[in-house]
Image: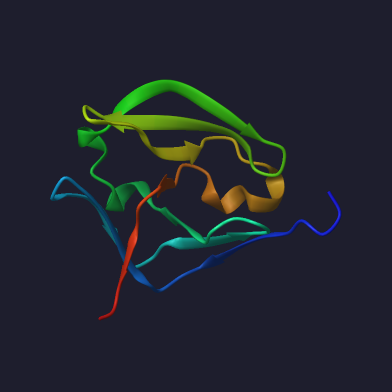
Length: 108
């Protein structure tokens, strides 16, 4: 699509994902994805995500620019987080990183 861009860069922001008062993820090394027409998204390395709290979902989505996403849920929050296991080559660095709908950026 003409005019559509995606960039991924290594960030230094301190970000975290919290749901229902429980810390789900915290990172100082997110990948920052900027995509035309979308909010900035932070993709967190799996080591910084409490994956044991997440339950795989049957939901998948397809993005023509990023590829196919898989989702994970909490008991009261379906499809709260997603990841691209086989992203398109131009954004390969986000492979296996988790992205949350609600992410806080903390001022240190």
